[in-house]
Length: 150
Figure 1 (tube, rainbow, N blue to C red):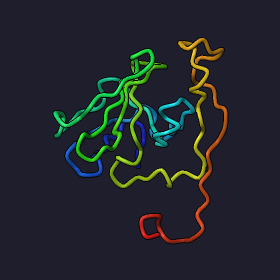
Figure 2 (figure 1 turned 90 degrees about the vertical axis):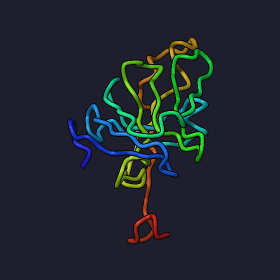
Figure 3 (figure 1 turned 30 degrees about the vertical axis):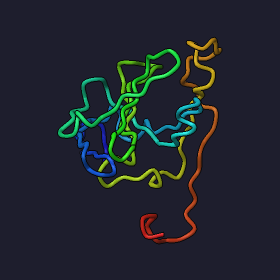
């Protein structure tokens, strides 16, 4: 599931925003980020190329949030508040897509998630290119039950 070239369906929590996406490199791009916004949002994102997201319904309900350099474009449903995807600041030719919005997927499907250094972004005078891995976020299940039954 979620291999390169596969089209996946996604939606916000209330189902108003529905989209279809082709992931750039399957699930291999799953990441978290340490920037101020992503740290508070807490989502696991996978990559899609610009143009590989098709909003099927609810586009008028999407709200745009931008901050700092105003380069990244973060979209969320104005009804339920769920972040669906964003156009990246580090590479505006890519989108980060919220794994939790993808049909049949959960951020808890990943035992480990690499964490990018979003704090030291070069646009903010940081030393790296905003893509270096600074850590790993781990999930260890305490039960055999699926996370939606806990």
